[in-house]
Image (tube, rainbow, N blue to C red; front, side, top):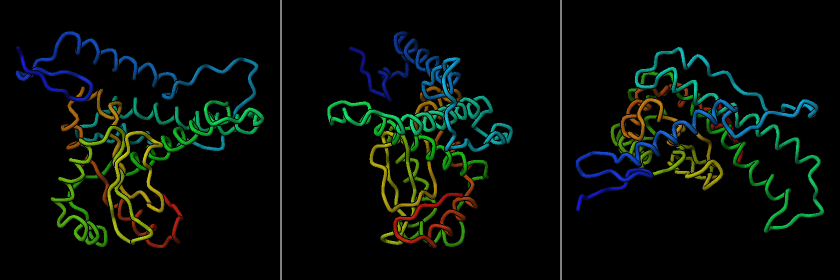
Length: 261
C-alpha cells in the first residue's frame, strides 16, 4: 500500500505525487478564493439598489504600492488578490457596525440571536482588517537582520537573529491563520503568539510589532500549498525599520493601550 502523509488539508504520497482528487480540490480552493476576492474578499453581496449607504467608520488603507514594488517571491497578482480580501474585511466591519445600531436586542440569547451573531462576527471582521494592516505594513523591506533596540529585545528572548528567524518560520508552519510577534506591555518583553482565526487566541496587552499571515490566500497564487517557500519570501521582504518604529511607539504606551504604524 502506498504511504501517504497529510500536508495541510491534502494527502500527499511519499513519492511526492498528488492525487487527481487533491489537484481538483486545490483548484477548487484557488477558484473559490479568487471568487471571494472579486466580491470584496469577505463574502460581501451586492447591495440592493434602494439599500441605505453604509457609514464608513473604517477606511481601507492604501497598500497598492506593494503590488508594484517588485518584491522577490511575492508577485503583483498575489498581492493584488490579497488586498481585495483585506478590503472585504473593511467593508464587512462597516456593515456590521451599522447593523449593530438597529439590531433587535429583545431576542438576545447565547444559543442564537442576531445580536450574538453580529457581535461574534464583528470581532472576526475587525481583527481580519487590523491584522492585515499590520501584515501589509511590515512588508516592502529587504529582510536581513533587525537592528538597535529591536535586535536587543529579540536576542534577549530568542538568543540571536538567526534563532528568531528559525522560530518565526517554525511558528508560521504551526499555525492556520496568523503569527504575531508583539511587545508585551505587562512584562516589557517581546513574545510570539499564534492564531488559528482572526478572533481566536488574540492576545491582550500585547502590541503587534510583526504580523505574518499564513492563511492559504496569502501564498496560494504564487506557491500553491508550498507554505515553506512563502515563509522564506515573507522574511526576505520584511521591513524591520517599520517593526522598530512600532516597538518605539509601543514602549511609550500605558498598559493596555494599542498602537500601529
